[in-house]
Amino acid sequence: MVDGNMTAKAEQYLNLYQELRKKTGDDRAAQSILAEVAKDLRMDEMREERQLRNAEPATAKQLQYLKKLGIEVKPGLTKKEASGLIDEATGNIDD
Image 1 (tube, one colour):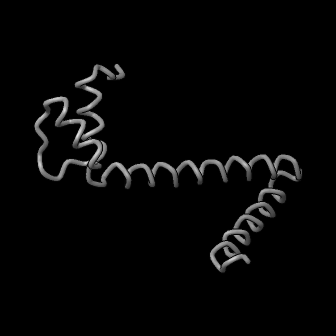
Image 2 (image 1 turned 135 degrees about the horizontal axis):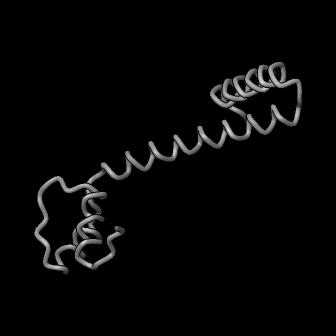
């Protein structure tokens, strides 16, 4: 069963497709553009999800590994910060 949010999203995509079709006069072009828009939107969602995850507190596993590496951990360390410290300590830094 499709919930109201999915129905609304589908309706938005359909309206966008129809507008693209009017502007391009070509079904394939409209479909291609719509597919790219959908990819861009999903990438934006993924970036936002990643940012939220990275702002979460460091995991117990990260904290344990940092301790094993002899790195002092400050209170409130985030997953992203912990990951950076681990990369630094193990030499896995991208330049």
